[in-house]
Image (tube, rainbow, N blue to C red; front, side):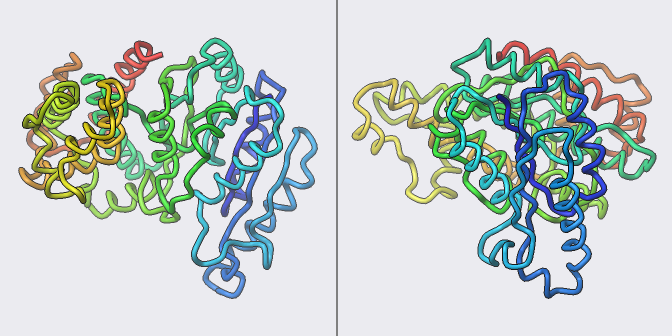
Length: 400
């Protein structure tokens, strides 16, 4: 059995298409579990009334839909919504996945996390199911994604710019063989029920719950990066979370890409050197490229001596280091280094393309160097995104 986990907020217009998409899946043994959610006080807020009514229509539509097996969790009707101190997509995903875990007698069954604005090929569920049938010890799967372009060229340029940032980041982590190399999209991840239970479920943070959950899986075991299918999320402006695709597009539309730079290759090499030092640190202290960052930014400073006292064998010591310098710390370090040296998007992208053997013609190269990454033409952005996607698809296959 496959359980599909779908959070819904203001998605009435998306649902008919999504349910048609799911009805056309080749694999039919699935149950859709939906949490329609909002804050309860929105019913008294005139500016949010349109969202409340949209959710009300979604609730009616899903309860009446009979073509597929659906379980609806109502966290949107009056007196059933979130309280002010908790709520949002993180809580919605947690409520859904906790319900699946609690109402499931077969821990080898799967949870497939999706979003309403994403297109899933007809073989999507079948390929995900087959992946876990073959790879029974894998804790989760970070599935490849690709944002289709629409008719709005401004929005197209924004999503391409954002994807280039994401793919360069991911490819560099793959290049240095870092355990936290994954792309975190709530619309494109899957995991067995047993793994969800073993790691203690999803932590309902306000933003980035997909990132933190995949990070949690990595700390317990291996996650897969390749399956013969792709999720196709839409590119839309959204401020319902603090970071991710929607907020990135909103910032980018104002010309602010400060939070989404293309980081220089040398920063990732510094991370690699630090990770390779963990085994030696079991014996004695030694300098690593990340020492200054750890001392300045992380409470408690360098932890190596404490780890040596707590972990009496090298394997567990190294694992403790991996858990300490995790995906969040890596991202913080990259931002720290970028703040030290300033942005270098164009040169960093050029380095990333060169190391991946992606060639730009003379016109595109001049376009990049003269106009800057944030002002590239649609054709140049599209070409770079597609080439990065091709390389990423090939490299994913080396990591299960």
